[in-house]
Image (tube, rainbow, N blue to C red; front, side, top):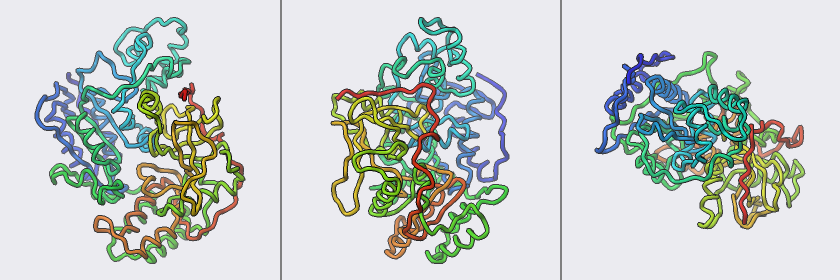
Length: 512
């Protein structure tokens, strides 16, 4: 197939242009010619190829990923979203854009890049045959169907939604359908795909990396080498072992027109002579010059409901969570609507494998950020809002664990016999925060001071610097550097009014 060559929408820096050309050259060797807009069948056999585009925060990795996606879209490469795959187009060249978590994927989607989670590619939905006809029509591979119970107006709403947002489930919801109407189950992917882009690849562990290499003959990783490596990997990341020609490094830092003090602080950490007390003085001076940096004498409890305090030590995390609940008057035997939670996994026996897949495919995977909305229809069930998910509302059997200071066993306000397990999310470790971003981020500096005093080193760099770098770069707009172990009083009660409801909520009730 041939189209006009794709037009770049931005002016690249020299290192971005080199990286774009290198990725384009690798794609050309597989039959995807971005310059001439020509696609040929993929090569079969032989070893797969892996490239990595690496660079620190602000180096333009996301911009490069977005431009590569748009160039491939212009050339006619089919996007695989994890929502629906047409049987009629499986012989076409395809691209999947992935992130390790829903929150990381949502950061890309907000920038116009249709990303999904790794899990949604590993497990694919099985559509009811009748409603699959609607999906094929929306994807441009079939005639407009006639479906009993669906009016022409409903189909028009679905079509209009899909034109502005390439989400089949979202379009179905606009027509008044629930996921349980058209998705009959989930299955582990059996067939391989074509090209995969993976953002936040510093979070990948070896098993995820190997799973992705089995699925994608061509894999392009985008990652930050200055972040924290996954736990248990001795400070190394999956792209560290790639040969030099396969690692494309972006070294230039691109700042906003008005400059970015948050990035200034993050990149100052690269100075090997910088000590912790020097860094704090730098933050204090920046705070006097720019209101995007705040030298905070206390933790702002109002922010904790949607933007967790970032800490290093578990003990600090637990103390802050209990303080948050105490100032809101939360009872020990119940959760308040609006309390933030972190999914800690799903505890289901093998016979409930399908129900596990249902929940995980909806975004309830380990590390997912969730807001408690209220009790479900059955004892032990919770109504939940999954942050960053495209269809965020669900109801599931829940086991909520609230850890207490100096107590080995957590307190469990309520629990189903089995289901999704949750920890409280008002504070999280910096490790767990990787891949996420928030408008306002509070960093608990006393914890980093302890790390600095201990003199710990990870991958050749003082641990406090790696922790500080990751924590600081989670902030999109404002950084609060909290220097004292104090908590402000809330200015208002917890609420869920800030969470927009999905067009059609899907309830995944798990019979126990």
